[in-house]
Amino acid sequence: MRVAHLSLADFRNYATAEVPFAAGPNLLVGRNGQGKTNLAEAIAYFATLRSHRVTGDAALIRAGQESAILRMRVESGGRDVLLEAQINRDRPNRAQVNRNPVRPRELTRWFSTVLFAPEDLGIVRGDPSGRRRFLDEAVVARSPALSGTLSDYERVVRQRTSLLKSARRGARSAVEATLDVWDAQLVDHGSRIMVARHELLRALEEPLRAGYETLVDQDHGPRLSLAETVAAACERESVSRETESAEVPTPGEGSVSRETEAERPRGDVSRETVAAEFRRALQVVRAQELERGVTLVGPHRDDLVLELNGLPVKGYASHGESWSFALALRLGMAVLLRGESAGGDPVILLDDVFAELDTRRRSKLMSAVQSFEQVIVTAAVEEDIPEGIAWHRIGVERGTVSVGSAEQ
Image (tube, rainbow, N blue to C red; front, side, top):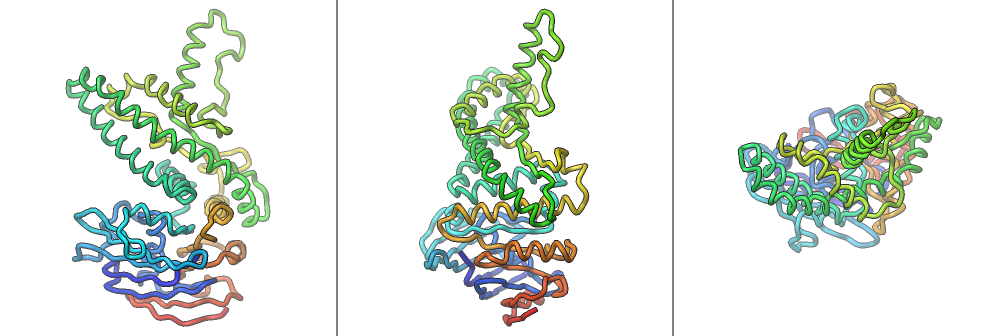
């Protein structure tokens, strides 16, 4: 899979832009603030329907305009596909595939990319929301149909939470009568997401380990697991029941190990089992939810646990180790998608990443991705780019692009 051509109108700082890309390595080069990352952002939008830099679409529309138009011609499996997205300020977004109107989420079925960006350090060191976003984008990349499931789940969480808040204003009995209906939808969509996340972690385990070792020449035992609110609620209930029923506890009886069920990857557990746990957890926390007006359990409140050498990356790993873990996550996803996709390799986007790395890691990373069908790199200065590569060079200055070639 590769991007053949990108056209923009009123996107970010571009009134218009026409950018041809080549197979193999492409270099977008120009001083900071000229619009390089905006091009990478536009390409990635077709795979995720969101920006990796901001929340919401309004910032993607050029100042003073009501909409932005993105068109991208993709070559995949010997076939040309024209993808189009119209991002609107005050109306629903629109999309087309080969000039035929489709729902915007359909775009993700036709294009796959893995984006490496400075913001990736936030996956390792930032808040759980960034790790959940990584998980959800990864499961959609593997199974685009889950984009609709995630949207439906988010809608149910919003509406259910609004219902819970109304219980605090005195309508508790009416809320409780309605809550079961929303619980059923929450469990249906949420259990699909939870199973997909576990399947992702199981599939990503080996590519992550190999990617990390490639970058640092050492095996530090990178590990992924999930801290799940559903499992934690069910386990708290089980421990409470054991404690209440135990007349004379023996040493260690009823205790919880450091690696609880909430932090341990599942095996090949069925969605029915996950759904049953979810329903049980909702009953456990219902009184708390009604009191606080918040949906307390579900994938929207879970976290991805990252470890090196048996210790959490956040708080224990060095800056270099944290960067290597973040890069290994992206590299692992690229290898995973390459092996699973019928459309060929995902497009590799490296957005200003080399500026964050030392010379050795730059070379290691470029060597690891160079075999992919297309690699697109943005850089402020060419000195940051590994040597010995024949680039399709695209200069960017003040929202204007110029195409040439360069060899290092």
